[in-house]
Length: 67
Image (cartoon, rainbow, N blue to C red; front, side, top):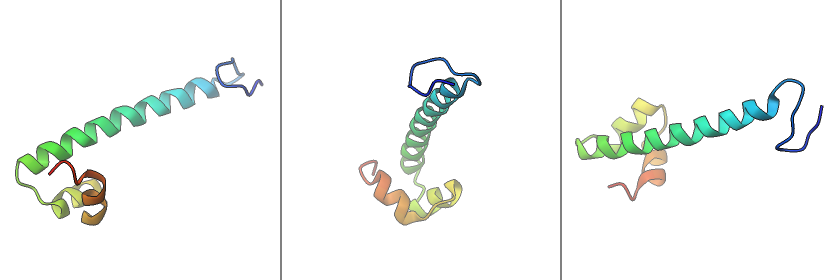
């Protein structure tokens, strides 16, 4: 098994981790859009946090620029 990034490996581990990275980026974008839309619809930070399973403080800290 080669361990350098960008090389082939026996089990496709590098490709799998790259796919996870891309999925995280896409999920982060979806979350940001969802939070923005929720705020525009009048939901509070507490309501959004509850829906996403985090505290309102976490939501406000992460997305305070959203509004």
